[in-house]
Length: 166
Image 1: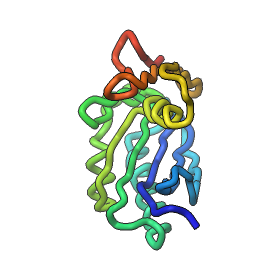
Image 2: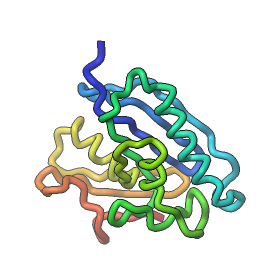
Image 3: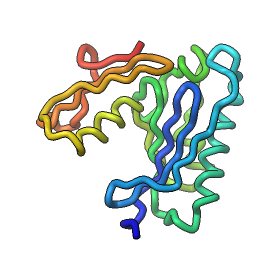
Image 4: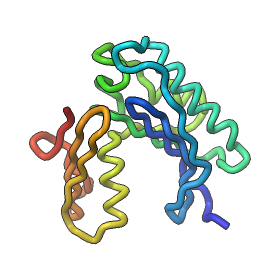
């Protein structure tokens, strides 16, 4: 038997959207992966409808397990400022990105937080690695790096020159 559900996670990449339920003991359940159509050069702004629809459908399919109080944590492969996506080059090139947090919140009637995917990985490993400071590097549609520092109040250093994405 799992601990109670703490949240739903959705991790968007340049090729796939992954969703899971996070339990209080840190375990994951109901892991699903959805392939996005096209690539950053061939997609249209309809990709945001596709992503929001997929997350909302996932939450609906698992509504018997996910309490109404469980929030959605949305990990995004690009820069985030003030909880909003500032650009999405690996998802849709350099076009303007809508307020995905608000779209997801309105559609699912849940609180949604948006975090950078590499920052999310750093916080994840921060709970599993005993080192006080380490670097997380991801290589996929882009290359990202963040420093995790257990002594820093936020844990993840994501300001230049401590981190970056190309």
